[in-house]
Length: 178
Image (cartoon, rainbow, N blue to C red; front, side, top):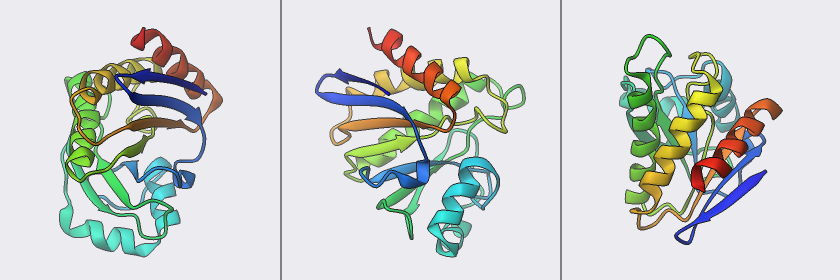
């Protein structure tokens, strides 16, 4: 785990299960365009949240790369789920632009709803093929740029599924913030 303070706000990264982040108000779903259950993060969140999540999300779909929408958390230990469609690496170009838009739009949406804490997975770094080192760079640079101008967000957490992804994000967090 790594943690830094930036203008009174906390950015942290840790290895864990995105469905078990009960101390944050909102978790972010690395969603598909239809906002339905799938593999990876979307499958895990929908499974833990129960069928009400898919029912609520249906009318909001489809979303496009970089877009963020918000729903209730249903059976998750959070209040909200923010759904972002990350870019498919090498297909949705420029990938770095669309990935940065995911983080920016999710943070701005959360802030506009008065949310103080949010947990992100490594958006696009799984089935969508984004190299984890590049994904971490885009994610952390974007969060650093956006977080200082937000009124409500006080804590941003990156929850990484694997030890290797945690190492990459933690290392990048410490070097990006310095």
